[in-house]
Image (cartoon, rainbow, N blue to C red; front, side, top):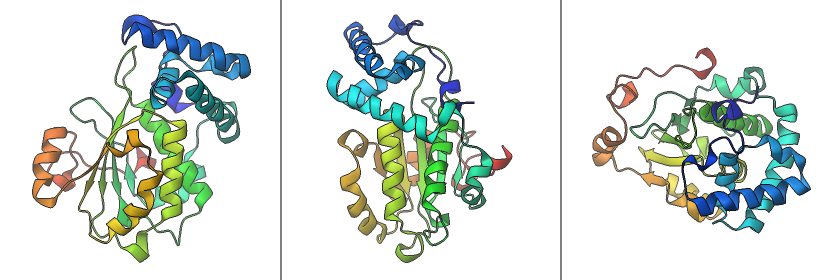
Length: 257
C-alpha cells in the first residue's frame, strides 16, 4: 500500500477545478500532457500532486516536468510497485524513538515531533535512514484529510535540547532528508519550529542552509526559549500539544501506533 497516495486519494480530473486558480489548473493539464508523453506512470499521479510540483518550480512547465520525471524514476526504484516502507525496514531508526507522528496544528496540518539528540550518526545506516525519511513522510501524508482542496502540508516541532555537535551532528543525513523532502515531496512542508536550539547547532545549520531551497528556507522558524510557550500554544491546541510542552498529547513510539 502506498500510504502517501492513500492519504491524498484525489485522482486526476476528479473535481480538481473545485479549488485553486483556473489558470493554474490549465498549467497542471499542460504539465500532465508533457510528462505522460515521456512517462506513462504519470497517469497514476493525481492533479494535486502535479500542482505541488508545478508550484515548487514557480509554475514553469519545463522545470516542473523535469522534476516530476525524476520523481517518477525515483519512485520506481525506491518504492517498486508503489509499496510502502515497512516497520521492519526501518527497525533501527524506530528503536531510537526520535520522531513521533501525532497530533494536528490549528490549521489542520499533521504534526511530527522530533528529538535531535536521539539521533546518532555513529549508529545509523544511511540507506536505512533514507528509508525512514520516506516512511515518516508517507505516513504523515496519509494523515492528511481526504477530499479535494483539503490541507496538503504538515508541520513539525524539532526539539534540539541536549543536541551535541560531536554526538549528534550528521550533515550527510540532514542533506539526504532535505533532498528527499524537496525533490520528491514538494510543497508538503508547512512549518518547522526549531526549539531549545543550542548555540553550537548553528555551526551545522550554516553548512546545511545552502542545501535548502528558497521556498523551504522561510518555513523554518527558530523559537527563542522565552517565546516557546506562546509560540507553540498559538500554533497548536492543548489536545494536540505534546505533554513535554505543557499540552495533553502523550507521545507514543510510532511502531506501536
